[in-house]
Length: 375
Image (cartoon, rainbow, N blue to C red; front, side, top):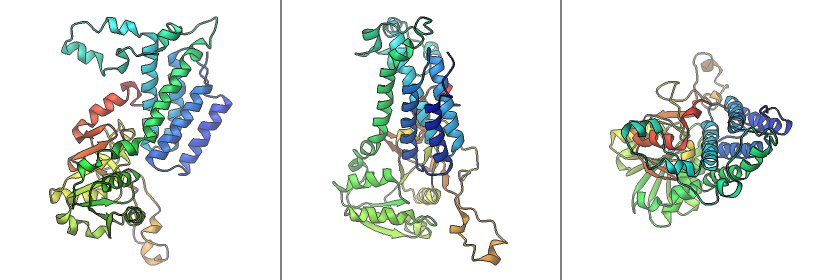
């Protein structure tokens, strides 16, 4: 049976999201991840496939189309990889189940551990698997080509729902230990408006009295929205220009910032100005903490240049076209994101605990399958 990537319902929903991504109508890591999961769920629910390879190819083709539409929204590819990882887990659980358990008593050696690769959760038999209810899956059944899809789809929908639930609760899970990271009378510096950092700081405010200094993050001035939100929650808030970050850093106890994407080497793309804050913090030995969900982990490297991502905003917000004589003589660059090197970061606070930058590779290994690093 041929893969069903060209079916009209699937093609329409994928093209719609690709168009919205291309036009920047869907912006931000969390929103793009949610939209991607919803599209994948709709695609899988309508897809026809008779073996696991066809299903993986359908999802990969959708992932490639969405990533090509907006390569700078890394969470699109991350979400596709996460869904593929869950699908393989459910497939192995359904098709092998108890057979895997019988081999688990073999002698453990370093060579066997290396050859095995990443440990899979399906090695532990779970209640309610397909083995118990439907028996072993049969692929490429000539008598009933849709039997494989019909049997597997219910657990695939549950797996995708798990990914969706993780995205919807990511802010709460990151914020639940906020009081352990922020102490009374501390002075916290943050930059711009990050929904994750906002939820983290508000959760800590229920237990601690502290002050937040917010850089206004020119030329977007998203720090103004952050300051208004935190002050309305009763948090002592001070709004400062970006140029004051270094001068104030000697009084700062902790820098807490968000991330757009966490790369494989432990570095990250973050809102413009984050590199300035992290470098100033390192000069004053001030800890830098990053709040980000694990859906922002991406098995990619910064291939652009050492200080930023190759993603730029409108230069007119930096230098207006009314400055006609000057505009002709200069090149104005207004980057969306800075690249913050891993040595400038002390810890990542995620929805699955706290991790140093050196552990990011392990988190990526656990979250995605090796064959999906390149979609």
